[in-house]
Amino acid sequence: MPQKPHTPGAEARFPFDRMAVERFRQVFPRARWSDERKSWFVPGKTAAGRIDRWLEKEAAMLAVHGDSKGRDAFAFDPISSAYLEVSDDLRIRTPYSKTVIEELRTVPWASWDEELRAWRVPFRSFEDLRRRWPRIEKAAQQAEPEERKRRRENAKSSDAYKAAQLRNAERRRHRYPLPAEHLPPVGKPVATEEYGIVIFDEVSGELVEAEDLTASFPNAACANATYIWGRWRSATLSELIATWPARSAPKADKPSRGWWQPTLPELRVARRNARSMERRKQTRELSKGC
Image (cartoon, rainbow, N blue to C red; front, top):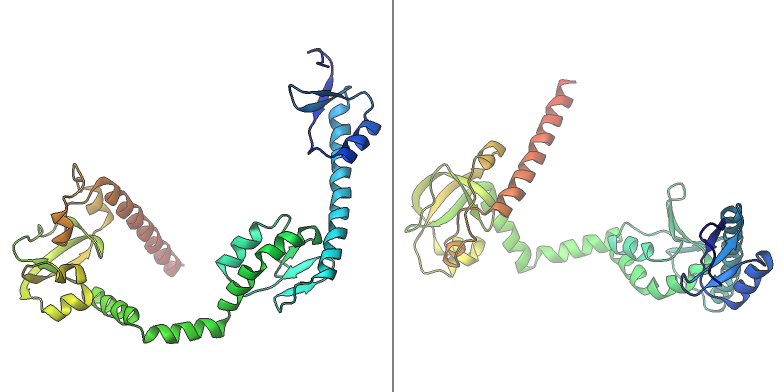
């Protein structure tokens, strides 16, 4: 029955459950259901506070019931793992892993306890935890220090690791292969695929050997062109701010030659990074002064 606009009262909404409805009607015999609003209307000036107290009691009762069911389920089919401890709730301790954190954050009522240095999961969430446990345990095992060390050692013998080492060494030399027929403007910021927006201060004229291209710049090695070495440095924030962006995205042939006029999105990213670097530099200088 619809209520008059001026009738004092409050609405109550909760998931449908026949027993919960019976308990609600016992406490609020004057409550009326509204099909239009999909809620119960409780008349009275104190209705809102009374409804809140009833909902809190319902939540506590359901939590106790859920914990009881979860304990029974755990006793019947427990999780046996070095990462799980059973107390008044379930406590999970693992090496740091983003995957573990992401999984546990999806478990209802799971929370991190800073004092215990463990995740705490109530028994009422046991079924949710059980479904996610294989992925949690696997991620925890992979995060163990010995397992991390083993993967690092194995990676050192891989071709990808060796190629990365060569690229890092080339980056420290601050040199870059430039097509002899398409040299960038000296002293002006240009975009590159490997190093972002940089400034070439020198083009030496020294020819790039084919093995250097193959090892560190495979994209350039595929092109049919003669390359010479250019010396680059990172663009400063003031230089990036003074740079006009390209009016349109670079054509397909420009990235293949190794450089192009930066676009506005590229400049925005570079400027943001440059500002962060300047702030860090200022913070270090201030800390040294203290």
